[in-house]
Length: 196
Image (cartoon, rainbow, N blue to C red; front, side, top):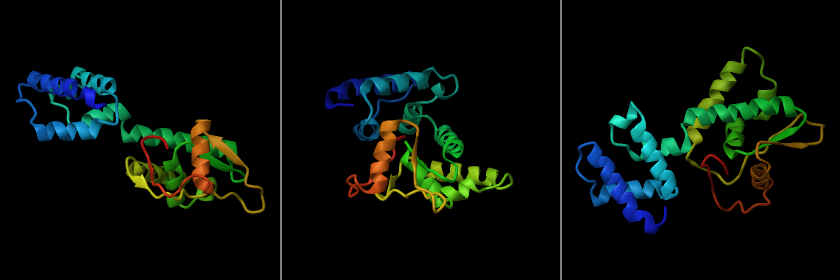
């Protein structure tokens, strides 16, 4: 949101407070809501607030910043499922002989944390559910966190050329590849907001 949206934002939030028979938000509370949501446009925040108050369950309560953000970003479990689907797609497209480059940098960190690409390629049917659960848990724990600038490299079976296969949005994959190869400005930290 931009500074010119501030007054409309305050009025909207206080109108929703009034609907819930609550006192208007004080300056400190408004400031917290504003800082928490300022990365989104006013229209996006307004849509999320309206979606929350229309919900027959959660709409009974005044939305917290995290409620609004969850509507804007989707829940972390759904994000982890989508990331796992990309990883499963890479099994078939890359196998152990090629190197996947995902459009989501958190997938790289999570794979690395759980033994690397080859450990996923070589897991058997008994190990598969545990690998999936570890991936989902690790991925969810990284959402919204600032990650180290050095993105882990994927390894293929030694002796084969490391052909890279993009999994997901090509432009985002190229950005991740630049971070992996060090050609990007790696002095800054990468912050995950659903994408790099």
